Length: 261
Image (cartoon, rainbow, N blue to C red):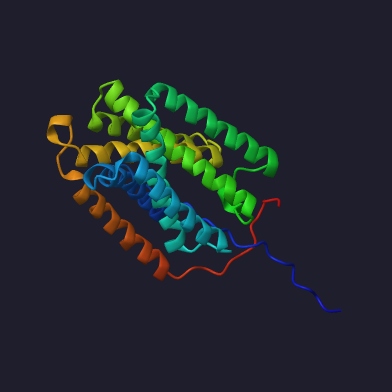
């Protein structure tokens, strides 16, 4: 009797959570803050033109990402950098162009993110990033990421500017929050999915705060490196890490355990 091999599940389209993942993510969110300022202010495009331009480029990048049937580092992280920039611009437009208070913006994006998770879970019965192998799941995934970036920008600016804690103190504060989440996961057995998404949310204001700290003028509480230097430093680090991941040997795909379609 011939034994037929059981079909394996499709490959995951997003990366595993590793040290490299968090490093590139932190670099990407920091660059998202400084690159948005560079395009809108230094190049003189303004918020509206910059937002339209970057949204169009993001749509193209996401089309490439959705066309992949597996995780491709260069394609995936290009989309992350672009969605980080667009998320920053969404918040900046609401605050600067439409006069929406940062408090209202932060609450609004918190509710939008919570609604995204609720609808995602209702449709898929999981929020796990280890089983993103359908277009619908990937759509929920990228929508959630967009809202985390917009929320993180609002939260970081709210604490640093409205609450007047400054960029350095704000960065330290959000770093402490992430450390507490990590401790809860490793020592208190916090749910892995909850811990991941909380850490993902708070790395955005952490990166944005340190991006502003490096790029903003000394008179505004920054170190005065400027958006050009800061953006290109972080872009160089991102490119180096993505090249490393692209050249790094990957293990043979295995069927995911404990996941339902």
